[in-house]
Length: 367
Ligand code: OSB
Ligand code: MG
Image 1 (cartoon, protein in one colour):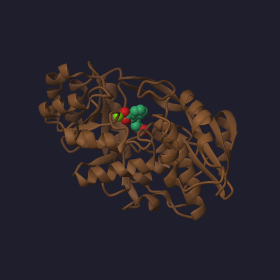
Image 2: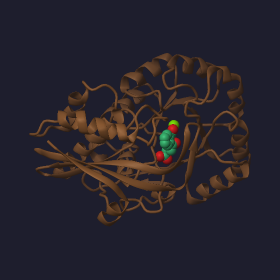
Image 3: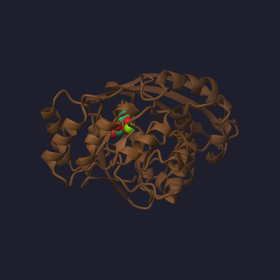
């Protein structure tokens, strides 16, 4: 499996509606796609880094730069087993989303050549996964209720509301009152609060939430542990967990009782699976997060979400929640679920016609 090179391709993907979080508003996704070419064929992946370093320190231009200058040149020309990629890239600190994209493209190439699917390789325990949807911050409560109603009508089995100071207890209560106690409901603050807000956040405790995701700063496990003691709502971490080592620390500190696993955030699907295994051993439920991926990133996330420890519905929504036209065959919800792809590798490829239309730049890095 000699590697001849890697193509870095940027595409512009307008979102069907603006997506507002506590860290900013997204109207279009500027996605970096990675295509690895080997003697046996090719492999695809999508880099989750966003346009600006707000969710985390990575951003798409930076990811492309570190891939071109450091990560791709570190690969051996004569090829390698994907299990070795993490070790080869480890001397470069951080840049987990860039590393994840490269490792995933190499894994896709390896699995396609071996005629095995991502789901089978990772250890999927079912052939479809229940899907939730992440609902952005809106201008008004009536607008939020309309958005949630439409998602429930589409079949989503769990609703996640983005919150921030000034948009929390009141809109969440309105959703709970309107849609009833049976609705699986959770919130995500993207690090918008401090421990001084603990008393205020207890206002969510009577709303029957599955969890509150990342209430405090990314780098503060100790304060999350203090907050978790004051809330009845379970604390879930997203941004804080960048590796299995972080997950181990968070679990032993009592900083969280649930983990959102985003493969990109933790450096890839192999590290994501290690976190899944660790959490399962501790009885900690996990679920698969998302980064507004195209069908390329979604395919792998859906496969991961089929592992047995993923006991909560993930942010693995259908293609049309994000894009009018996806770059792969669209993922379409059936009865609130998405099917785990069964074809070799990711089980999906970009549709050439669509891909060319949305491409904004391409570069070839020869090995
Ligand atoms: O915090 O989970 C998050 C999107 C971009 C960056 C961070 C987050 C999100 C989402 C949407 O909540 C998840 C998705 O539907 O892909
Ligand atoms: Mg989150």
